[in-house]
Image (cartoon, rainbow, N blue to C red; front, side, top):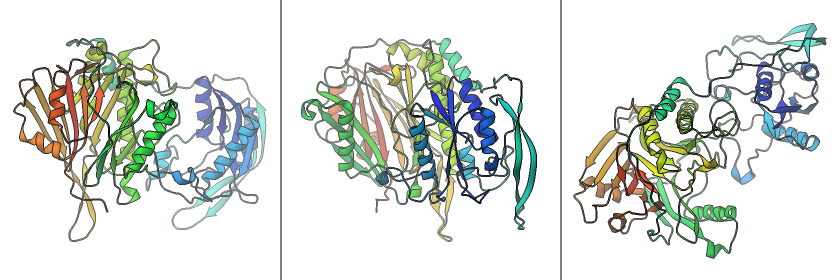
Length: 574
C-alpha cells in the first residue's frame, strides 16, 4: 500500500516507518501536527509536540515531502472510546479533529495514499498508566528525537542546542532540549532489515503442530438442510438487564431485489426497533458465517444486548490498525466487548496480522493456531484496558469449519488449546457453507471476566470478588448437556442425535434454563431426526435456527444442538 507516515520525529514514528517498508509498503509522504506559533511544547494528550523545531530536518533526512498543520484543539474527550455515532464520531474542539483535518489535507494533495503509519506502539499503556516508569518512555516519561535510522538518506548532526526547564515543581522537573541548529550529513546506505516478532508464540506453534499430527473420528459431511424451522417473526426476550433478539431478517421477495448491504442495513434497523440501540462507543462484536439458509432468505441476525446503567458499564476494543499483534477488524465490529461481567470476542479467523491475509498455501494448523492466538491476545489487551485483575472463565466455544473434513484437525487444535482447563468447556464443532475470506476455521468464544462487583453495605463502595464457575455435564442415551454457570449467567450446550424423538429424561435444570433463556440457538443438519422433537421442546420460546452441514463435539458426532444463554439476573433495567 501507499502510506503517509505520521511523523513526530521520535523513535516510534521512525521505527514504524522501517517496519512499513519491510512489509512491502511504500511511504510516499509524511504528516505532522505542531504547536501554535510561539509555543515549543504543549501538554497534548495525543501527540508528541516537543522536538517540532527539528521536524523539517527529519523529513529532509528521509527525503520525503512533509504536510504540517497546527494543533488548535484540546483533549476534550479523554476516555478510551472516542466520539459518538450521532455526530459521526466527531467531538467539537478535540485535538483528534486536528488529525482528521491533517489527513484530509494529505488526501487532497496525495490522493493515492491508502494507509497511515502510526508509531503509537503502546497506546493502551499510555491511556491507562497511572504510575511507575516505562523503559521505552511509553508513559510520557520522556520524548525522543531520531538522528539516524536505516531509512534516512542522511544522518542528522546537532550543531547547537539549549536545555529549557519548563517546570521545577516538587512533583518533578520537566525540561526539554531546544534544537537551535542542525545539519544533514551524508551517509552510506544501511541495511534496513529489522527483527520482527515470530508469527506464532511457542504455545500456538504447539497447537499448529498438533493439527499436523491429528487423530480422531471423521464425520461425513451431509447435504445442506432442506427442512427448516419456521421463523416468521422477530422475538425479544429479557432477563434482568440482558435482552435477546432473534429472527431478524429481510426476505428477498419483500426487499425487492435490493443489494445485500441494504438488506443487512434493514436488519440493523429492525434491531433498533426492538427496544435496542447500538452503543455510542465501539460497535458490537460479531461472528458472521455463511450457512445454507431457507430459500428466499439471505440474512438472519440475532443479538444479545445489555442495558447499561452508566456508559462505564461497557468497554469495547476496536482496533483497525495493521500490526504484528492480532488481526485488525475487517468490518464494522469490535474485537471485544466487556459488559455485565461477560466478555464477548468476535469470531477469529487465521489471518496473519501484518499481512491481513490467510496463510498461503492453505494450512489448517496455521489458521487454527492464529485464530486461538488472536483470541488470547484480544482477551489479554481487553483485560489490560479494564484496569482490573480479570481471571477469564471460558463459558462456551463454537469452532466453525468450512468442511467436516477439518473436524479432526480442529478437534486436535481445541484439545491442545484447552488442555490446561480445569473443567469441561461446552464446545461445538460446526461445518458451515463458507467462512469469511474463504478461511478453513473460525473460533468464537464467550467468557466471563472472573470477577463480580459487590457493594459493601458499610462503605457503599464496590469491591471485586473472584467468581468460581459451576460446571455440569449430564449424559443421556442420545444426548449430552454441558453447562457453565458464573454468577448470574449460565451457558448450556445440549447436543442430541437420531434416537431422541420422544421426550427423554432431561434434568430439571434444562427446563429452568429454557425458562430463563435470553438467547437460544438451534443448530441442525440435513439428517436431523431430532429437529421436530426440539421444535416441540422449544414451543413458545424464540430461537435462532442455524442450518449446518455437520455437527460434532470433541469426541462425537451429533445431528442437532441447542446453545442457551440464560440470565438469572433480577436487576431490571431502569
